Image (cartoon, rainbow, N blue to C red; front, side, top):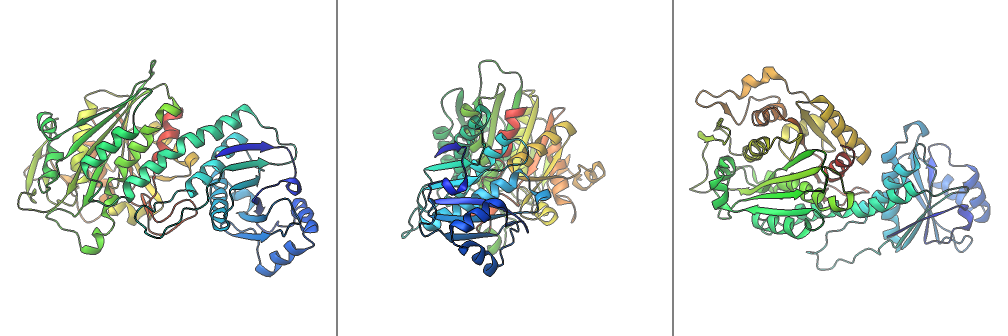
Length: 491
């Protein structure tokens, strides 16, 4: 997609779809009045008849009938002026892309009137177009791909394009495919996305310009004593994998470790889930998918830090050889965990990666995992929970999420709740009491962090969309990819 900037008015733009942001209860500004005169009053009549007010999330499409150089005019509600944020531009652009797909428009022109730094708004607009362009139709027999958007023009009278704006647009175009990678991996059927497949895709997408991938098979995993991954894998006919993705620039200032949960399908093991709860459990590797998606774009982002991604991956299935409630796992850092619920398996494999990574003494570690339903109960389906042992790191991650349009909310590591995961036969157990499940899960992970700065994102809610949204169809969202890239760009 080509991104262009023009110093001109809306009445002069020749395009398939002309997009005008409209502030709530201010839909009669000078630009709209000028266009309405060109349209013989038809636009104002449509606005009145449809009761369009410019409320956020609303839109109004109007065919120009040749009265303007643009074929269609789209009003996109931005909400009240004081409530317009960076993400408002991202969502407005996503809605415009959906409308463009419906009418077959291949060129979009948007009246660009940001409040704040224009380069950040440029990046948000381009991201919105790209996110809304995603489709996963490879298993549909009668699907027709939407017309691609070949050009996006940002315009207004007096607009001066800058090198910063052009860089922001170019970077958004380069980084967007990382979200596609993560979404594709989550959306594939679980019989396709095995641990072996996930490792193969990491090798295919993460290569060149400072990136390399190393994959440990079962024998290497046994040799390295990744006991949690081996325990969860015991019920499966598919062998596990431990994926290591390394980005090493010539002059690295710091070392960052990213760890993603890679449970390719979660039946709950012997602590079997109800059938309904299994329907979307292919999503349980969304944390690992986000790591692969983010790492694949580092050659374009070019951060001057060393980044290593670890993804322990297996499915979690019941069988005669599966781990049993009451089993005890001894980890490579010496700690022991009593497994009381085999459906709390994500923390068992993340503990391996954390214990191994902590020995490498990185500057910080970030874990991403669809870890607990309790986090969804607390924060719903659009907000991820954030925990951490180092507040400046947590603050940086939350800020990065805000800039990326991915909602994060900090939850506490309540030290008193550590009593809930004490075991009578081991150091700790893998589940706590009836309440605070997201916190007790994070507290268990903290046992394997050592003295390294660490942040944990529980993305169980926003990793998978149960219905279509302007920026994402139903399915994997790729949540976390853009937050990680924003974080790495500024760390």
